[in-house]
Image (cartoon, rainbow, N blue to C red; front, top):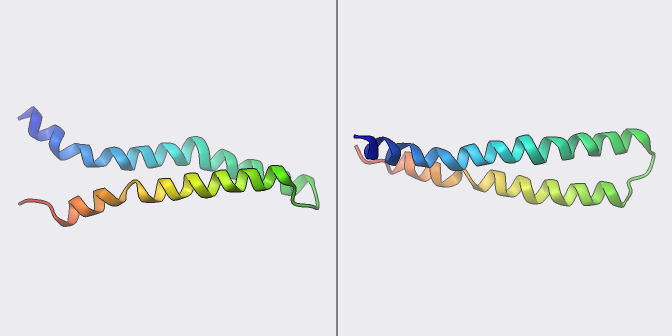
Length: 77
C-alpha cells in the first residue's frame, strides 16, 4: 500500500517546487523591483536584471505544474 500512496502523490512535487520558486525567487525579486522604482525616477540596469530573473523563474514556475494537469486529466480509475 505505501508504494501506491507514493505513486499517487508524486505529481504534486512540481506544484511544491513551483510554490518554492514563488516564495524564494519571485516575491523577493518583485519586492526589490518595487523598492528600486520607488527610490528612483529612472529604470536602471539592476531593475532589468531583476526583471529577467523574474521572467525566467516565472516561466519555470508556470510550466512545472503542467504535468500534474496532464495526470489529473488522464488518471486511471
